[in-house]
Image 1 (tube, rainbow, N blue to C red):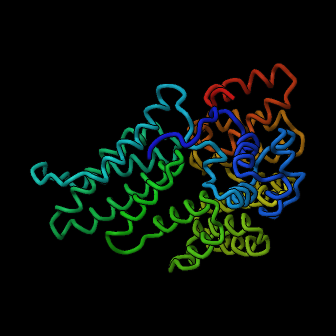
Image 2 (cartoon, rainbow, N blue to C red; image 1 turned 90 degrees about the vertical axis):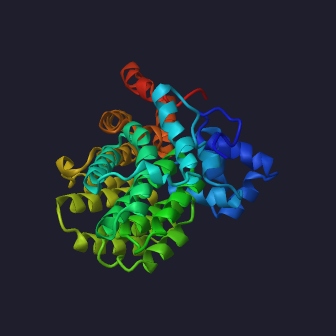
Image 3 (tube, rainbow, N blue to C red; image 1 turned 45 degrees about the vertical axis):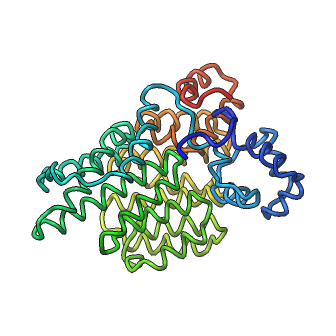
Length: 376
């Protein structure tokens, strides 16, 4: 079903949702802590607002202990705030319609070269973090690539199929970010159905497993891929899943292998960003600056730059440098606002900073970021 799965206001932080679901399950904090394998004091701090959630592994453990999709604790999919958000959310409805679309043989097919141009534009929007443009383009693109792949002559069929797969992976990515992970799985499955397994499909499967709070499955999926030994991005995703599962040594080994496989400046920068994200995941916040300081920002696409800045903000907040955290989030919002708006950990951090910021200048800087979170 497309729509909200609970009645809590969209601005409620994860700790507040945790308290509601723990009560619904009839568990004490000690009982939940025992199931999740963590000290009861952590749960008390999250529920009271004394602490905030910034680790995927902790969120996954709590969701598993409560028998929930992690989206029930993050509040995804988020309630619509503003007309642009409504357009982005509408993509989920429109993409669902595509699943029941019947091929219209009278409509003809696009030239493969024209379709390739549309797919490249969608990839560029994804890398720029412009989910508004991507959401408006994807439903028609899915329809066009499905039709063209099915009806192209043999000499163009393979390229048309490749374009269809890329379009379906882009749809899965957007749906995952929106919180419609079941629908995202459907598009990943459709991407796989056409032929040879592409690494971009495997990468999206791993991201989905991470977002579903299943890091061990994500690692296993990475290890089953034939490309894992030669693909830096797959190794990066595997490393994050290992860190999420608490396997710090293995995560470090995967990142070292990814660094050896990095073939260009962008790949080298991606490994450095991944090292910072993994450091946050296992709580080594002092290490983050060591990794982020080596990144050449000019080679990062806007979405990747926004991710780096969100990681920087998370580490700065943990070190008590509220000013740096606010500045990093503001810069991330300028680089790729939709990536911040749909990131549950960014939203969690913004709420936490607002509660801990006393200076009027910092509160004024945070105010534009809080407008799209919605009422708490």
